[in-house]
Amino acid sequence: MEFTWPTEAADAFARVVASTENWPVADENLSGRELWDACAELGLLGLSVPQEYGGQGHGFVTTARAAEGFGLGCRDFGLVFSVLAHLFACAMPIAEFAGPAVRRRVLPELCSGRWRGANAITEDSAGSDATAVRASAVREGDAYLLNGAKTFVSNGPGADVFVIYARTDDTAGHLGLSAFVVERGTPGLQVGEAFEKTGLRSCPASGLTLRDCRVPAGARLGREGQGAAIFQAAMRWERTCLFAAYLGQMTRVVDRCVQQARSRRQFGRRIGANQAVSHRLARLQLGVEAARLLLYRACWLLDRGEPATSEIAMAKLAVSESAVETSLAAVHLFGGAGVRVDDGIELELRNALPSTIFSGTSEMQLEQIAAGMRL
Image (cartoon, rainbow, N blue to C red):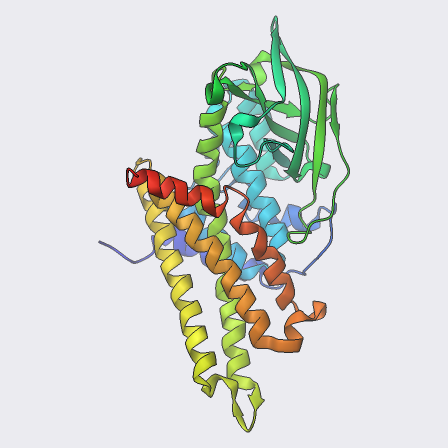
């Protein structure tokens, strides 16, 4: 058993932290390209995409370590989320399941930052239950006609290409779902305006509608009916490597809390000298380290070609719930300053809150863990 970082992973972490730690923080929907292009220059937009298509070609461990560095260095977690959703929910399904022509056309654009990618599976009546998707895809000769509506499309307002999931067979349950690559400007595809969210506000999100949107059959990912499997493959990346960024965020928040406990004085002594404070910070550190071990174990197993279904679920659950607890504790520790918008602590909490919902709720992760226990 080895607990040292591979050189590739260590170098990626250090480089990303050093490059992003002075980036500005935004708390609104952004359409600017400057930071997006900077992410492309760092290789963040294609960390796990094969090199032949313009990516870095990293496996799970190195990709996760780079993402952790991104979450640690970059205080704008909405940007972090935007970049990693682009990579794991759009670029990776294309890299792993698209035909050669689609991969050659789309992936270099995504890795270079010229295009922004988005995923569209969620509907008003289909969140945790992907089998409830009602958007349809009907085969007509060498094309499909897509109809329906999607919501919570992260990067949607500015996306250039979408991975859209639609039902090709109403009678086949999860085997009736298929996935398609649809470029912006395709007739019948209409992208909605960005809507307001509690957290991750600098990652714009919207809905989209499909009205007889004609998509070539060659733009389908994988086989017809393989959509659920493609989505789960994307979730392997997202539930590990995207959540590694939350490890970085938690580390940054705990470090701020420790500095506050050392410097803030009340009743004639440092607040860190109070056992109630020091013990809570010790528990936060425990949560971060335990979540980190679970996450990198899952990544290590995935790099070995193992399914790691339960391990992924445990990692996602541990990281997301620790992220919320850490940020909530920080607000409490900082007191009045913790709820001031200009101090940044309340923003960390708002960015952590969605983590227990997206990529599968905590309850869904518990179901996966229980299934692995044959319960």
